[in-house]
Length: 118
Image (cartoon, rainbow, N blue to C red):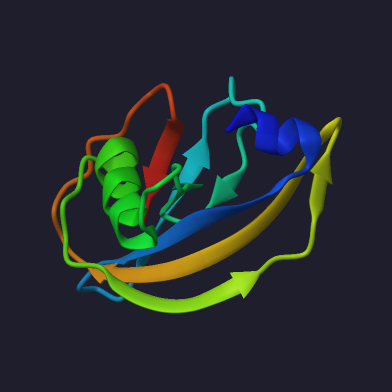
């Protein structure tokens, strides 16, 4: 998906909000080695939808890859975000938002994330 950012191509993405029973929202800190906004605190989990992959499948895959969680996801709005530029990269996305409610512990992927907080 690097070419999408390098060429500013419109593509599909997912964003998942993990909500704990306490009502707290789990957020993540992007890896300091990431080319797209390294170290940024952002939503619980985000990612690009692969070719021939559904939004639902991508949301479940990203949740598992980034946070080590498997949980029921409830889809919400799909939004065309305005283009965002960072250096030479431009993000243009149709994003489907999801919510899940779980208290399961996270196992973060250190390649993808620096940390998570709730």
